[in-house]
Structures are given as structure tokens and as C-alpha cells.
Image 1 (cartoon, rainbow, N blue to C red):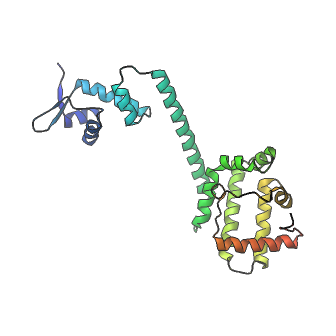
Image 2: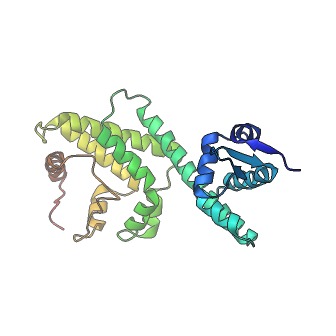
Image 3: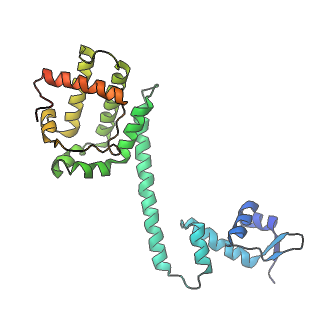
Length: 252
């Protein structure tokens, strides 16, 4: 004879909360075997088996909606279902690994910086997250081997590049409003260009020449960490520097 348990006894025996049992009853995947006139819920050994099925399917990553469908199905295509679930878990694993990698890079950025400019920080995290999409976009402008070269850096080297970009961008934000042609700002512009050449593996002038005149920037893939006013000021600083080294920015 099947033993009967109050909802409290059943929750304790199955290591489930009463709140969870109420919710499972509400969504229809596990009803109590008996409800008294006073509304008290009671469960039996058969309900234990049902709950074991639910817990097992949850462990495999199935949603409660999917579990509900499986519970009412008289015939599972188990292999197909498990293969689908495995693929979902692999995708989640890849996402988690990407998140861990992004956090690792973020920790490296803030390691020596007590004061962080949020716009630059968010910009760098966004760039890390969208690296694959950026590669595909760049392939519409540059030859594929050049694009691959831009992303051949080791993880440690990439962290150094990100930190250098962060530090240079922070300095420029701090200097915003000063004469864009002053020695201090022009030195940072020089370092910025050196960093760009290091990342791309290309001479900066050649890089500019390879970019088509009618190319449209993608503000989602390549957002700016600078305000509109800062960008206009920076554009003037770059124009001054490039003119000094004999590059006509508008002569293409």
C-alpha cells in the first residue's frame, strides 16, 4: 500500500521546498494525489517517482515548459531530445567560457586602476564580446589574411593591448579641451597610432589608404568611448599630427 505524506513531509523527504511543490501543482507537472476538504495537500510514493523524473530532466537542462510536454507524452523520441539538449548545453558552455574570458580581461584592466572611466571600460568589454562579428565586418574591407593577422595576438599580448588603449584613452579624456596641437596631446596621438600599427600589423598610412572612402562605420560593432565633442576634438588632434608627418587625410 502506497504511503501518504503531508506536503511538509513530502518536501522534507524529497529535499524540495513547499513553495516549489505549490508551483509544480500550479503549472500542472506534479499535482498532489489527494487534497482534503480543508485544502491540505497529500502526496504518495507514485508522486515521488514523478518528482524524480522532473528533477532528473531539470538536471539535464530541460525547462519546466519542456518537462511539462515530456510528462504528458506517451512516447519520447529520447535520442533526438537528448541530442538537442546536449547541443544547447554546449552552446551554454561556450557562452560561459566567453564570459569567464571577458571577466579575466576586465580584471586585468582594473588591476592597477582605482579610477575607471565607465565609457572606456564598457567599450572594451563590448569589443571583446563582439570579436567574431568584427572579424566578419573587417573582411568586407581588408583581405582575409590581413584580418587574421590583426587577431593573431596571444591572450597575454591582447590584454596588454587593451590596457594600453585604456590608458591612452583615459589620458585623452583627462586632457579634453586643451589645444589639440600641444606637445602632450600630440605625443599621445603618436602612441595611439603606434598601438594601431602594432594591433593591425600594418603601417598607419597604408591602413588609411586601404579603407574605402564610402565605407560606413558600424556603431554597434565599433562604438566610440568618446562623446561627440571629444571625437571632434580628437579628429583635429589627429589631423594636426598627420599633417606634420606629411599625410593628407582628405587627399584620397
